[in-house]
Length: 189
Image (cartoon, rainbow, N blue to C red; front, side, top):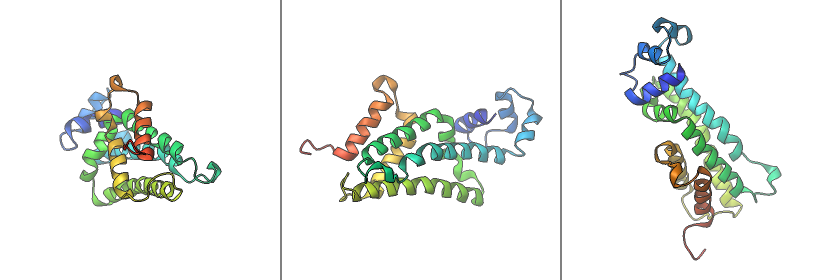
């Protein structure tokens, strides 16, 4: 039923989706949905929590400091793994990801703050990773790393909208993004 809700929230928005609609798309009795979720707002919370928790669980360990990596010489490898996982998760959770971006602001203030905090944890880990890679000399340190993070994470968050497997695999895109970040685009590098 959570999958049906994510799809309907993405397609119709929160206000235009009823619990009856969700139950119908989940092929269950309308009243049965309240056994699992006492309100539409609780269902929305479950949808949004699922995507941010999954993305964090799958991406955070790849970005976290790893002293066994040999003094920072593996930032490139870790970045490629993390950006690939971020893009893959976004593709796999398409309805959820779109619902998150579209509907997080429709939550009450306390719930919005909860999700902002969860999002912030992942953003901070990306920021720390980029800073550590620059400090280790594996990437340039003369660029605005905050802007770099926004571009990378923003592009990854929209992967399910722009990715076309006929134009290249997700692996090849992760390789391209990694090369752009660590090698630049200039032929003189």
